[in-house]
Figure (cartoon, helix red, strand yellow):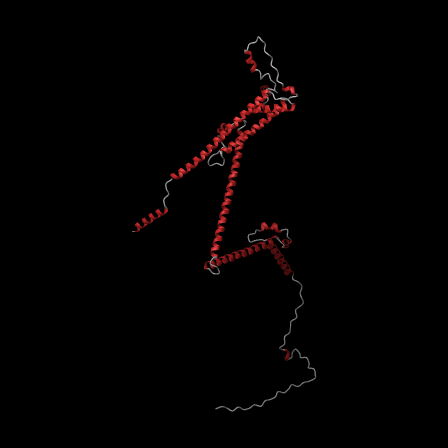
Length: 412
């Protein structure tokens, strides 16, 4: 059963009474002011704390010093004893009060930078590893990119190997050059100590040079010098000695043998033999013809005058005669006289001897060159014969097969 609903009369709200009088201000103790909040007023600023100010100044100085370190590029491996002198001129370096504080800030900064570098390297390594995994998995790569990467890597490796090989060859060439220069300097010192004769020859001097206790005259296989190079240096040394003594002899001729007029080059007339003298005296007269000349017309007479001076005796005979002929020709040109007959004949003989000596020297050089080519050919043939005489190399595949058969037989 449902209970009947009783209707409720609607009651209209009564309006609040309005008054024209001003309401009194509520007191703080009234109940209406109990739920209100008051905003606190900050106290007046107190005086600044000196300890806080000093700490802030210290932090600012340290931060400016760290900025200086970042600008200068200080890394994690830097050392205080190497960087302190470089940073001392900056005013930010001097803002830090004591050296102990500067060093402490520097070491903390280097440790922080080192940690950052390690983290960066670790991240880079992980990134490369992830890239390698993605490349191996084939994700994000075209089919032809792997071959291009392999070709680029191979070309780079070949370039690096070629550069290393060229660098090794260059160093080897420099080393050989230095060794050759050192060996040649030592051989020159040996020549200056041992060879002092301008008429010395290579064949006569070689045994004495090879007996040097310091081994400064060594040539052949396994050495940096060759016999031809040492012989050329020996000839240059002897030529230098010859030029030196020739210069001294030329100066002696200019000081001793002089002419004042054209008549000085006239050959003195020999006395005519009488009718009653024998013919045997003619031979003696022919032998004394050279002795009757003057130093301007006869080399023998000039040699008698100059033989007392050591500068003339040190010079070889052929070189003396050549210098004498040149000096007489020069004097004849100055005074307008004819060259004496004996001097002209001597000059012709010296020229023939020079040509003959040059021909002999060329023949000797050709023979030595052929001998050297023969030695090189014999060395090649000997090395080839030695290579051919070695036993044949055993095949690796055949020996491997035999080993397999033995292991099978043993297992059976």
